[in-house]
Length: 459
Ligand SMILES: NC(=O)c1ccc[n+]([C@@H]2O[C@H](COP(=O)([O-])OP(=O)(O)OC[C@H]3O[C@@H](n4cnc5c(N)ncnc54)[C@H](O)[C@@H]3O)[C@@H](O)[C@H]2O)c1
Image (cartoon, rainbow, N blue to C red; front, side, top):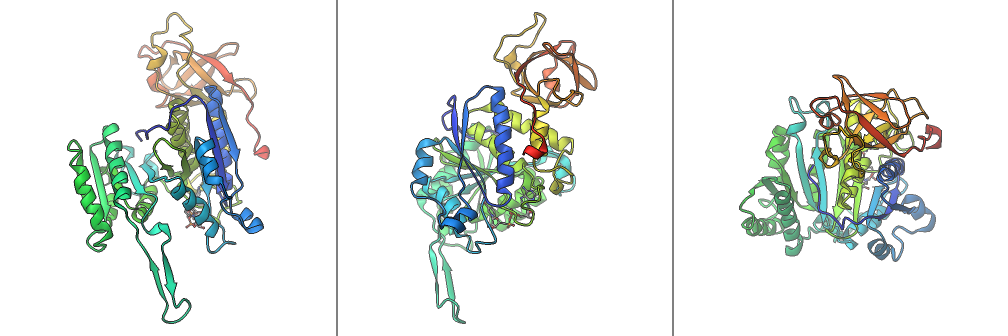
């Protein structure tokens, strides 16, 4: 997907990690390890500080979001990497509401960006749809609507009980998310924005959405903007997802339609999400919840969290590292190196092992190392990844930056690392663009990181 705007693009970052509950505690550490590996490759300083906020702490100490937490995150961290919250031992889900909704509201993370991107044709349940057909961004308003918790019960527990939940929509809140969607489209060369509501039934709250949309769209004449009722959108997105580039909608509908979109692109295990206040500390998480039904079994898919991490790195302005993560996910999907939810037999931690057993090709900061090198480093794609199948363990560096050049054959890439003998890896779509057309230039690799991959037992 096209990028989301930067926080500041600084040289170093401090990340708060909140794994939370259930599979959040399984997938988040994997994502952290993958980020560490990718940033070690580029020598980018990154610090992680983990917080144990979740059901265990809530049940033990009665604390959900500790006092001062919001200010600390806002002032001392660049971003938050979040797992998931939800535990059957807390039926009210109070701790989750306090922590996740608390952070969204108090950090004013009004943009919930949920890309829907099919990364491999076989993953969609839609017939005859391919990767190029399913590629859109859902922007969900993230701080208002039905999620603000305004409401109450009357005569609770009696036969006459009444329950009320208010849908809160401010002009400021509606306008900023609609404007963000248009700006995102314009900045990324996307031509279509669809605003979705239910203004035919919600004649007050969504009348406001209608009026604001009509005003804001006038400033974006270069973009083809349209409106669909949410029920029609749900139908159309399944019938023909090619119609959509950017969708913007309210909190509740965004929550639901992005899950529908996630399923069209391979399921919840693959779906990432960013909770953003442009320019401020923002929160990145997989779309899925704590999945108590599979927690502790080691079969949770970590790729949603890894893709959310890629969104975070992009937000920090670290595109090569974000690209390395995305390419690694694509390569794993292509090779069916996946967890059971996607039809594979891999465990949650296998992706990291795979990642560190690959050669990651990134533009080198060094000048070309061979005189005959034709392609300047900056012409290389941001990053690419080759599974180093024929690497002998402990003999070769696990991750390397590319000097430049590739010896290309029809089926494989021959690489040569200084001080090491040649190794072979299959030609992949990621690596193909790196090879000059003559296909005879040799790739030299510079070792930047050679820490051996840990065994599964040490995960
Ligand atoms: N952002 C969040 O923290 C968040 C989001 C949604 C739900 N929740 C909470 O999570 C708990 C469980 O909710 P739910 O079951 O409705 O939704 P869920 O997303 O946890 O699970 C839905 C289904 O998808 C599967 N699934 C989800 N993520 C997966 C992954 N990474 N790999 C493989 N399979 C995966 C689960 O096994 C389950 O069958 C509830 O307490 C809910 O409130 C939290």
